Length: 225
Image (tube, rainbow, N blue to C red; front, side):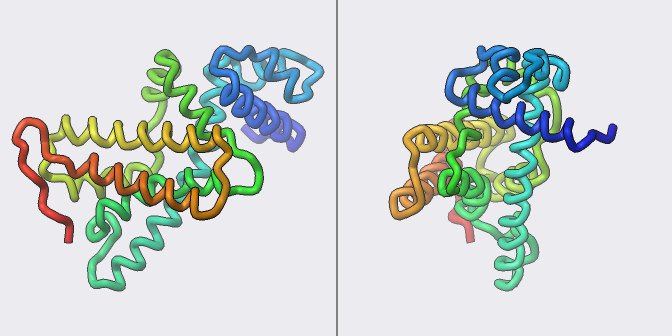
């Protein structure tokens, strides 16, 4: 369905306002409140355009995920080029755990360094803390392409883990990264040594989490080449 420019502007305003209000107040904020805050005289505008609270939240997630995934795709392409120049084909084959974790984390870190205040990370953290919404969103679509590529690359580097342990570690990695950076977003971290230190520390910590010995065998993984 082709949307008119006016409809696109209305939907964008509702998405922006929903993201900020949910980030600040939680997922219980009503559609009428969001419509009013977005400047809509019809306070049922969010209901009209998205059908339900879940529909609006899914639209926010889809919009922001697409933006983040485009950035992850660019980072992976750069990594492909750097790794290829070193004689190995493909980032997911030759990249280290740290490089792949950085591709996961860096687009979120860049939000914290932007001129305009970000609400995306707090919004996502609020959604993940709502069990009903988390389940609904988890069942809705496959992970974005960039995230799938990162997960595949990490799986190749973490063959000491069984499939269940790997799935759990990847889930934890995403959750920990998001919540740490949502906390930094709340604090209002800005560009500079402080933000760079947060990024580097987070990447190192998550890489260590992923490389830790498998719980069943205690076997220490080989150091990546």
